[in-house]
Image (cartoon, rainbow, N blue to C red; front, side, top):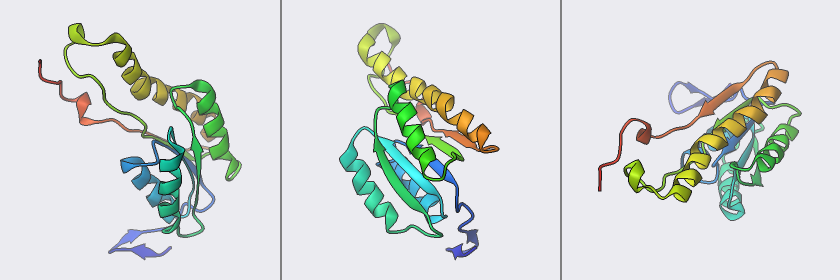
Length: 165
């Protein structure tokens, strides 16, 4: 195992497969990059193929310890897409060892009595349903592999309400 900047060990994820939702930008791309640098086989997914391909190209440049990356475009609020994405992630090694459910986002903020119902449901599906679908379809594969890790991202919006308009 080699070292990266100080005493942070690197490597150790060789032969392990991970799925990172919302992996084309921001925190998701950073998580994927760290996993690939440490030798993991990573699938990033999101709705925009171009962003995914661009992120994958950058991430592959820092791959270490045999790490590799692939992309799979899809919508994690749709169960059929999640099934396909998870199967693709597991295809890299034949198993799935972890999932970082990072896809999410905001929408109309404010008191419930002023919410647009369609927008509220869209955000609910993006932030809650997508995570549930990822749990539903990744955990059985991780159990079959002998264990794994599921990381569900959130935001500070969980802790603080928005100001009234």
